[in-house]
Length: 400
Image (tube, rainbow, N blue to C red; front, top):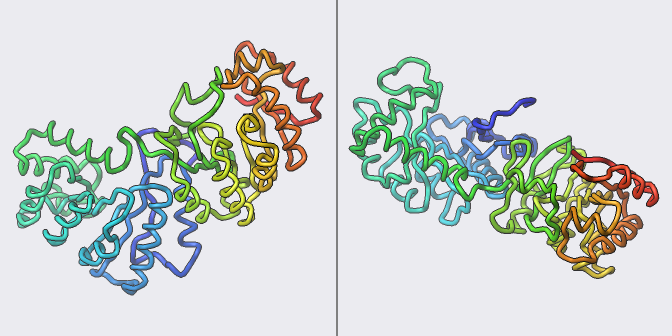
């Protein structure tokens, strides 16, 4: 994945007849993919009684593992339910916390309606267009329009006009055409409804789902908050909602339990370091930060904190010392060579932030390996910043 396209997204999962729930490698393989940019769903997963190559009990166990992954990462779940629609709904239960797509649905009408009542979306593919499939068209017409999706399931199930040929994404137009007749709408209106449904269920509409964990530069990063006490002139949040194909802007503070669930799924070796940063200042959530970092350290990760170093404005010396305990290294954003310049560039909430940062740097040096950084910014005297880092006898790196 050396190149990424902003208009292509992916899902990751293992078919119910291919997943081995007894093998930790199966879950790890999916997690590795979920850490990549623009992966927005888990699946397809579910149950298959048509070709039961894996025993039903094993399929159920694997399905539940996929649900766990989707809920931990906050991703949409794409569900396969061939000849097992009732059983799928039973496993899903009433309290799934993420959007669910009943993929390529051809099952009983009553199960589809129950699924919609629970908030699921129903995906129709080529079979909706088959001449002898009036039952499926009647079902589509009876369901709420805002809960319907169309798909291809390519290379299979080509729609009627191209039936018998290899299916491809462009053939979805035939399914949309049939649905527009069912709804008695023109194709343009039908397409707009379907697009809006797709964006909503895949959590690409506003407010978008936030990537709470991502992988860059060989490391895994935890995005635990959007809050910060500084309002730096160079802050990336003022220019973009994310980096490297990840959407990192927060629409509220992420749930601590969800972040803990993610930590449990990560394994040393998936990244060189586990870095706590945030599209904000991670020490704004000190108790959660210490808990997450402690668990990551227990699991064998080298753990790093990226911070503006001003947490002594909010925490005592004792609290800060405890906060630093799990960390192997700390990277502090220095960004200036004096208090006056720091206040002008980083615009902290408190005028004593510069002094607090210098105290923090000294304190952190007693607990972990400390590195200082500065963002290249017009008007910043980088040479003076580097000289200050040298006087503090600490390594220094310029960030672009």
